[in-house]
Length: 141
Image 1 (cartoon, rainbow, N blue to C red):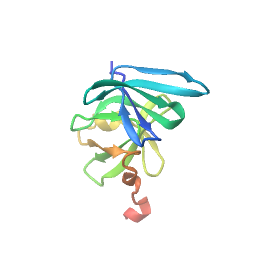
Image 2: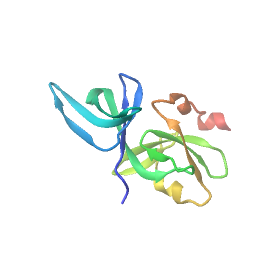
Image 3: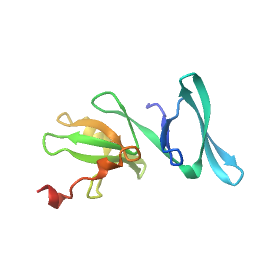
Image 4: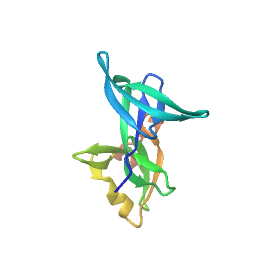
């Protein structure tokens, strides 16, 4: 069974928050809230992230070739011996997958199980949006 982990992109602060021990969902006044404990240089601190200002992403249970956790929203480099194209990790139809530049969705685990594929987290769509700027299939020819 995979560990359940989350991270959240705080749109207001433009910062990624890695959720450590617990996550709470609730209501504060009119809006939804997400709160969690985060690690700081002096220990742990409670972090409140408002639901409308946060994009919550779940850990896929997979690790890239360097042992790094793979989350929704990550941009991966998949090297299958040919051209390396950045793809985005997403959740659709009750499974984790990748969305190719052309918009096609494929099961994520398939690429981790292929012995000739190297999968590496290259960044994420929030902190590294420039990674999504890639040539179209026609431009790659």
